[in-house]
Amino acid sequence: MSDRAPHQQVERQLPTEEARDLLALVREIAQREIAPAAAEGEEAGRFPREVFTLLSESGLLGLPYDSEFGGGDQPYEVYLQVLEELAAARLTVGLGVSVHTLAAHALAGYGTKEQQAEHLPAMLGGGLLGGYCLSEPAAGSDAASLRTKAVRDGDGWVIDGSKAWITHGGIADFYTVMARSGGEGPKGITAYLVPGDAEGLSAAAPERKMGMKGSPTSQLHFDGVRVPDARRLGEEGQGFAIALSALDSGRLGIAACAIGVAQAALDEAAAYAKDRRQFGHPIADFQGLRFMLADMATQIEAGRALYLSAARLRDAGLPFSRQAAMAKLFCTDTAMRVTTDAVQVLGGYGYTQDFPVERLMREAKVLQIVEGTNQIQRVVIARHLVGPESK
Image (cartoon, rainbow, N blue to C red; front, side):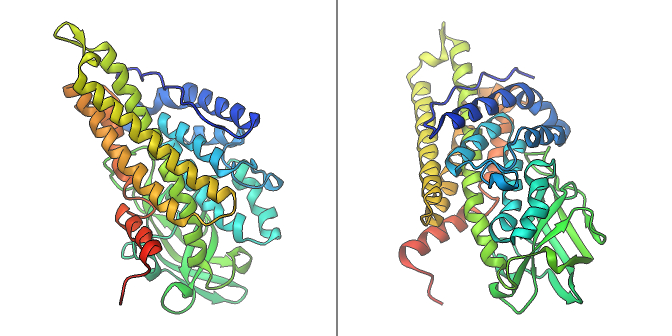
C-alpha cells in the first residue's frame, strides 16, 4: 500500500478561537489515529469502534448539541468542517459521525427535557453509537409509504417490521426508528428511541457493498419489539416531520463528507503529479493535467462554499432545506467527478489498490445515493422553485 499523501491544510474561515483549536485537534486525531489504518481497515471490512470511542471521549460525537446534555455547543458551520476533516481521513468515520448526529436529532430537537436528561448524555459523550431507521426494503425514496408498524399495548408500543440500509445496523447502541402508528401517509408515522439490545430486534448479515466496507450496512428486523411510551419522541403522527427535519441537517453532513473525500483525492493526485516523471519532466508540468487539477480544486472550493452557506442559514435559524438539497447534490456529484479524475491522473496506478484514489472513487459513489438520492434532491429543489408536481 502507498503511504497517504499529506492532507493539504485547507484555509478555513472559523468563527472563534475555540473552533480553530477544535479543528486542530480533529486534524491531529485524523492524521495520527484514523488515516494510517484506513486502507487496511476498509480492505478487511473492519469497523473502527475504537476510533468512535476516542471521538466520544474527545467530545466530538455531540458537537452541534447543547452542552447541558454533553454536547459541544458548536454551530453547524464548525461541525460540518469537522466532518470534512474526518471523512478526508476515512469516510467510514466521517459518515459514521454524521449518522450518529442524525440519530440523536429527534431526541435533541423533539424529546422532552426528561427524555433528554435521561438519554442524551450517554449518546453525546458516553461512548454510545447511534443508527437511524427510516428506509425499508420497499420504501426508500418514498419514505412516507413505510410499513413497519407500532401498535399501542398498555403503556407502551409493540413494533413489527423491517428497516433497510441501516448504517451501523447490528452494532449501534440505539436506533431512532420511524414506524407507522396510525393511518396511511406521512401523518401516520411516529418516532421511537429503541435500544440496540431490545428483545426481538435482530440484524441481517451486512450488505456486500462496493465501498465503505468498514461501515456495516444491514437490514434490521423488529419482531414484537416492546418500547415504553416514555421512548416515543415527539407527538404521535409527528414522526415524518421529524424525519424530514433530521434529513435536511443530515444532507449537509453528507455534503461535507463528500468534500472531504474529494479533497483527499485531490491531495493524492497533486502529490503524484509532482513526483511522477514522463518525457523527462514531472507530469505536473503538462498543461492538460494542470488544468484538470485546477478544475478539481475549483469544484471542491465551490462545494465547500455551498455547504457552509447552507450551514450559516441553519445557524441563523433561517430556512435552509433548499440549500441543503443543493449542497448534497453538488458536493456529492463533485466528489464523484474529482475522484474519477484523480484515478485518471494516476493512470494505471490509479486503478490499483496500491493507491488510495481507487478506494476513494468507490466510496464517492455511495454519497450520491444515501440520505436521498441526487434525483430526489433535484425534486426537492424544483418544488421550492415552482411548487409541487401536478397530480
